[in-house]
Amino acid sequence: MATEQELSDFLKNVEKRAFKRSLYHVRNEEAALDIVQDSMMKLAEHYGDKPAGELPMLFQRILSNCTLDWFRRQKTRNALFSSLSDFDGAGDEGDFDLLETFRGADPSEQTESAEDTTRRAQVLRAIESEIQDLPARQREAFLMRYWEEMDVAETAAAMGCSEGSVKTHCSRAVQALARALKAKGLQP
Image (cartoon, rainbow, N blue to C red; front, side, top):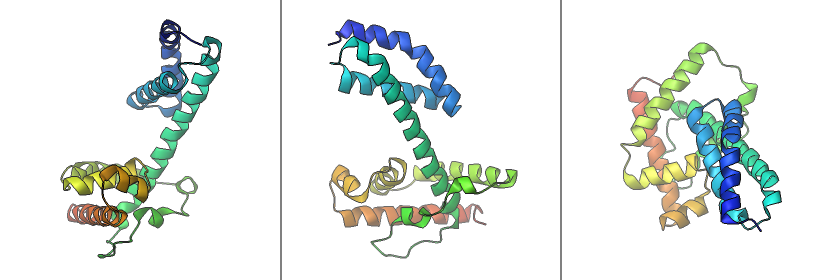
């Protein structure tokens, strides 16, 4: 069983190498730092009671998993934001699920021009700005569902409301974002 001091020493020794490894993979300093911090917290929280000799392998596995999770979140966000401007709204249907709109499309199979990449960046900045203007419950539901990738049941439990309310909040948030993008001329 590793002592607190052994765990602390291990984390200090591995910190810089882990950061460089993460930075090499994600090419974003803030994201790399977040990945390393998350990995360190998970190691300390879930495996701090393991023998000191097991910490290096455990940490490498956790770091790899956190990096893969980051790439999965990026893929989801890119798919969401690349197509959100094409969304005209789902009406007032309470069972609308925006993620269903993107299933089956593999963004890695598509090639983008510089114009498409620039347009996507503009849309992303506009969405980030508009999210701040959403009503609190809509913003909370939207971020949990589409940024944190929680399912409807998890989001409902976290928000303390029904699954139908989560769907309604998300639908209204998506509609508001689509209107805002259209008003800014960011629809094709």
